[in-house]
Image (cartoon, rainbow, N blue to C red):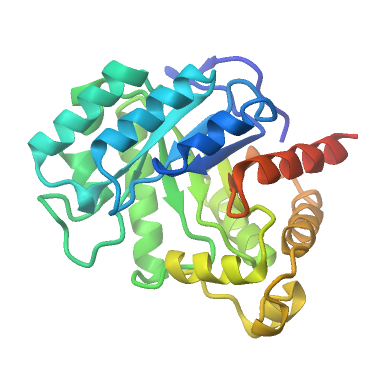
Length: 292
């Protein structure tokens, strides 16, 4: 799990540096990146959420701001929120023109009914988005604890299809997982990846420090379901709404399991639910202690 510090080439595919962690922001909250830029490691890749209550102008502005601050913008493209092929092309063209992102994260998206022609990220890939825009680096989503609307068999089928497609397109690929609270489920999921010969780098979604009420709200929004035992272990209950130790304990549990075996390239993706500055400061300290 060493930090890859330079771009390298493997089997004809140019690989981006595998940064110790990436993080996420929304267009409306982009000011938090500007305010916290002194504590965010230079060159950090920052995913830009594709929310239904934001527009393309906000997404493009966020990407440009991230680039101007010295970080790497990673636009998330929500297939089911795109209105048309023309809408897709306009968004991608403007993102590339204004912020020159080196990688994109392609997802299906939340709407029950697609707003346009793309049912999911498979159909978006099949529309030749990678080839049309010269995209060389793509991240896709993994669901170690399952998906509320898609069964496990279909999740695995789609994951393998996307990996095969992107490799044939000579794209480097990372898997960014949904955040969760079950460290054992996450490690079992990575073990299965490796046992099936999938050596793709994995970024495990980490919820940053936040009170339990906020974590529960985001868990519901993201479709994350925690068992009763997990809820008790981390104090995720109505009786502990202001408890902020969830991140520390979860981090300890996850790392204890990861360090027991060699699971290849495993990194982290920070969901800064409690605010960017606090979450980044916390993550920097965790990684400092981990490497000491």
